[in-house]
Length: 87
Image (cartoon, rainbow, N blue to C red; front, side, top):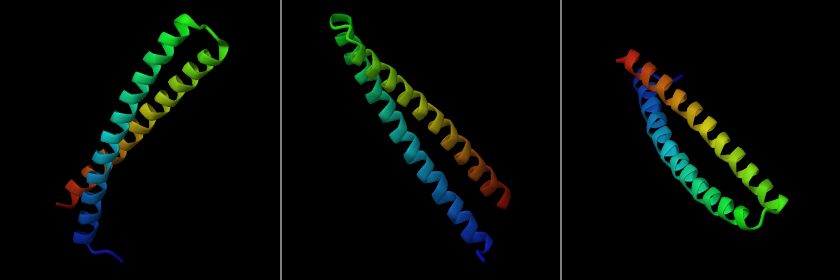
């Protein structure tokens, strides 16, 4: 069983990792926005259903990343709060 210091250390590591994950998710969302811009440009010239399908899937992927970011942020907050309670 872990002692309080080990728990606090584990929580600190989790908070740091959550920060890294958030940064990576933010970068991924920015790249998806760039993909969407290109796909929308292409769609305006070639309104093929497959291009629209790609846009839809891309938007869905972005939404899932936003959802993941929310969960990671909440996880970070809970770990940080508990670490604070331990002193």
